[in-house]
Length: 166
Image (cartoon, rainbow, N blue to C red; front, side):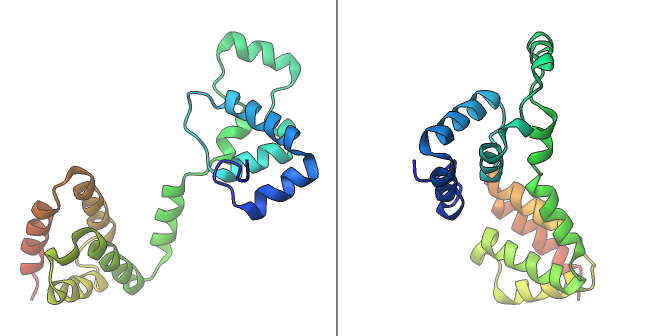
């Protein structure tokens, strides 16, 4: 057990050295029971739980209530797991129009590859810089096209949109 649920060695080894491997294993088992059947949180949650498990445990009086009412998780579990997509959206929204355009073109190059040529990507960047097209929407459409296998169709639609700009 060199890494705790994808946590880096830099974070996991000191925990195992200071608390002992057996204690870390017990706390990992406890947190795995706590999150059983739920979305697996990121590695930071596991490290935080191992450091301070009482922060995530219900008080003894509430444990019986939680069992009877089928409480999914202690309140802190939900706080500890931040939405990475929300953080990315907020970071993207804080960029300038030029930075959003550059990042969007980079993202679309990854998704669409050589389906668009260099001139089309350049034109797309220009259109995005003046915010004539919605960068967030284009990124979402590209992600959807990638997961649905409809990149060729989405590129065709994008070409039609680009053709409307001179």
